[in-house]
Length: 125
Figure 1: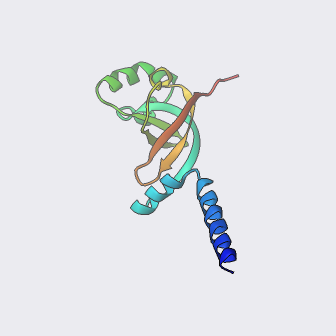
Figure 2: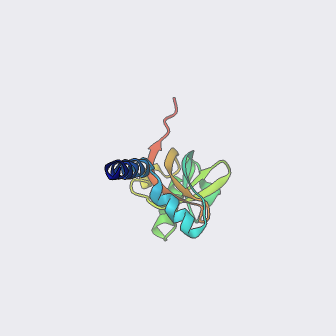
Figure 3: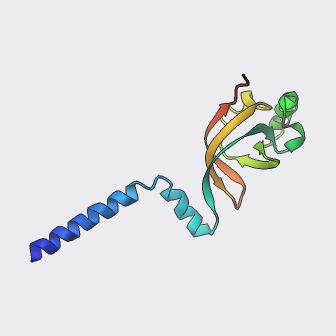
């Protein structure tokens, strides 16, 4: 009887650890639970712009303005569906400023910031 109980306990622990390992956004969910904010996976298409110019320069002709604003401390943003999102990672974004892109990552709805996993140029056919 003791062996059966021990075997059941071990199998329960294995099943529980397997279930926890399958949750890829566990850290994000824990952070959201701690702060009470919603964090969710997003994939948004829009234009890269900067925090000084915003939606007004979210197009290909605004590229020179973005370069100037970025030198003056502006942050990179995504303009998608009439809304601006802050981006936490901007490596390689300078070459895509003013271009239509697809940004994938975790959106913290409280701060409106996307923790960027990838930024891809959307090629027009």
